[in-house]
Picture 1 (cartoon, helix red, strand yellow):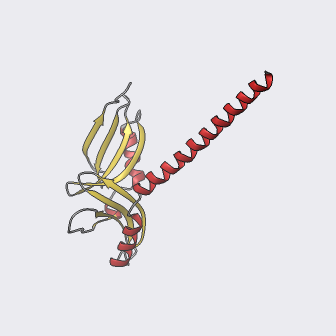
Picture 2 (cartoon, rainbow, N blue to C red):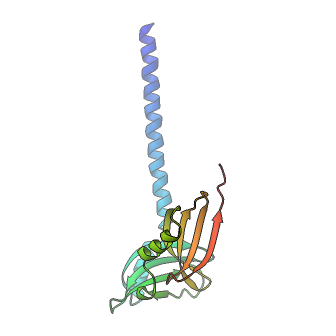
Picture 3 (cartoon, rainbow, N blue to C red):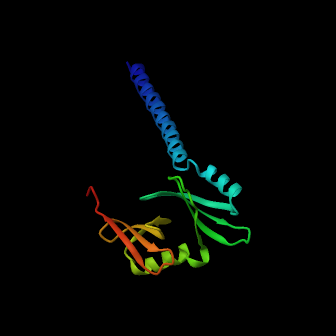
Length: 171
């Protein structure tokens, strides 16, 4: 009788271990698939920009998905001038939009300015954005009421252009 109880415990532990390993493996697989789809096209964009334009040393590629979709990256030209570049992902005319980094406020400076105006907020992320023909900084955070907020500042950091606030869906 005692031996059958031990077998039951042993088989239960084996089944739980196998299910846990399957769950971990599936989670890793899903992460890789999602990350690959998030970064799809980044290598093509880098190769295309470096071979077809005067921009070299393309780095920090990320996607911006707003009204129009862009690959956003930093690159330097042959004169070693650093630029923030937006490459539209749709349309026949995929003209590059380049902004000299000297004409824009740095990420660190815009975060410092933002944090001094919102000391109870929890910072989430900052990224370049492009809407309505204007380069912007998109700052996402949670405010004191735990709402998710997206602020769009001009790229030079001089003005708040737009703010979206989303209430928490579930308490």
